[in-house]
Length: 497
Image (cartoon, rainbow, N blue to C red; front, side, top):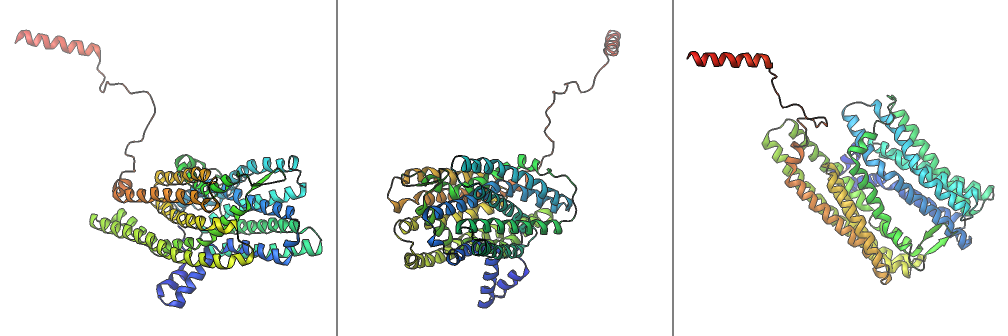
């Protein structure tokens, strides 16, 4: 994990109310602020450009376009991030810094080819079958590719410990989005929906260019081995599957409810169920603070305990190793419970605020009926994510993959049956799937605690495996003629004796 920086650490270590509040503000701007910036600027554009006066069909097309861009760009980048992060971390440990820029170029090529393999057929279908305007479709594709590039580049900025740079680049992108939207709609007289879509594409492309230029300036040298990281996909494929399954689990229940009877099909291309999608969005924001709490707790405390245990394993006594291990897992248990306590308090307060104030802004009826169960589900989802992070720390690829698979499969299966229930139970699949995944992850963490010695000390290989013909069973070859002469001499000695 990348460090959040000395400023945040010193703020929390002072222990005063003002320093703690300051540390939480900096942590927020360093972790989830980019997402809030994008969402906030879209809401600002709604108000400034008169979005409510647009035709309903155009509004639904725009909202579905943005929804698909965000979901599928995240899905396209999720299989690459964990494995590439592992490759870069190993190269930094080996001080082979010239491999990082090459990995960035090679990974960018593979990631964008994968995204194009999904995006190009879909947007061709949207143009030829859905009949959507060509310029609109092309702008959607540019926004999709730009967001894939943005999510991919954020990995390298987090490894360079530049969370603040991420927030800075997103702030620049937010200004570009607002400015370009005003220019295209007010001056060039584009339609409101296309002007907003164009501004989002232009803003995301600006963020991606800023990130890429900073990475290129941070890592100067390149060894031109652009695809050296591909061997890690064979070795650590379970980490890639874990990220993919977890991301699919976040949106798998939405895909299920896109098949209900009253779903909406826009231009024979986009399928959605707006009440459930909106309730999901509100539930996710209700529990988003768990990410801040988790990252802060891990970076300020657990990382130090993990580092102390690793140093004890390398050169410490058995007593030092046992003490470091005990302190590390004690803190792990405490932090898991601390995340539960703090997030429960925050979620209850946010839930009450949403129930009281959101109906005044038009969020009522079916949306608020689905919201409670989904809020409980996302509460457990973020706790599940904290357990997956700890499994990554201990290099338990099997446990993390099993956790993500359990979460995805049970969420989809239960959601499929829940869509026939009343709306208040629509989110039960999310809750049950997240709880099942959390149970598997927590059980796996306890297994790692009991078997940490074998997990750490028995992973090496003394004799490498080899696939070849079995060697001969003759160890010392003997000359047959010489052997016969020796037998004759022995017989002569026996006769004389």
